[in-house]
Image 1 (tube, rainbow, N blue to C red):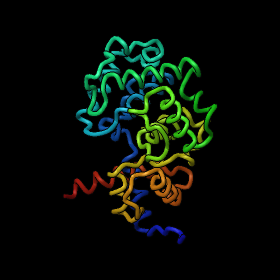
Image 2: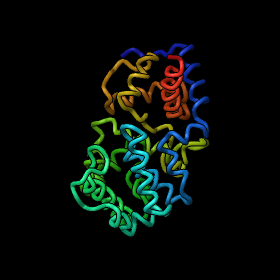
Image 3: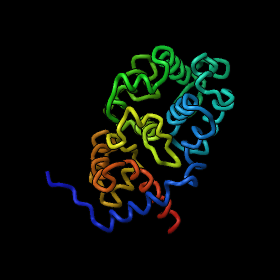
Image 4: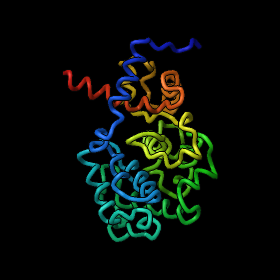
Length: 254
């Protein structure tokens, strides 16, 4: 296979966009903002995971759903999950919570997460024991929630792009960022993280000739990650901000 060559102009634009958009101004309109609303590592980890799970579709629709859970937890999200506080605000019913997720689906997710916290103390400790790379961490998280009946929300395996799990890992692992927390930097090398990929990211990457595939799969996500490694050898997911910024810039130009 021929080695993928990045045009110098494209490389410079990606680097420019990444620097432009990885700022505090990025936070208010992004689901990563929720983990910055709570105090303490345990609460931030828990809030980040829950927010990532609900981050799809329209932000105007899913932001209130995340905020509802944060309000019910009164900021103490780790304690709220660990001690089943969510049972008072989420009926175990087939009523819709958000789009395809029912209240029962949410209960399954939080029950599985509660089990993880009980058995391992934290998700970080679970990942520490079961993974040493970004891809292994994605697989380990998917596997746990599948075993404990929450695969309606967390993918069963890494056959899909697992966009929200990869995004959560970006938040947890990357350091020196006004957005990402870096709480897991000591257990996962950020160079091994996988680009969070959905159809929108695929389209933006294609516009910049960074991808040929149109499928939002784990294989495609890893190819895009390899491409970003050529631009940011120490921190490939910095490129995630560039692809976000490309859409914003083009929207402003239209």
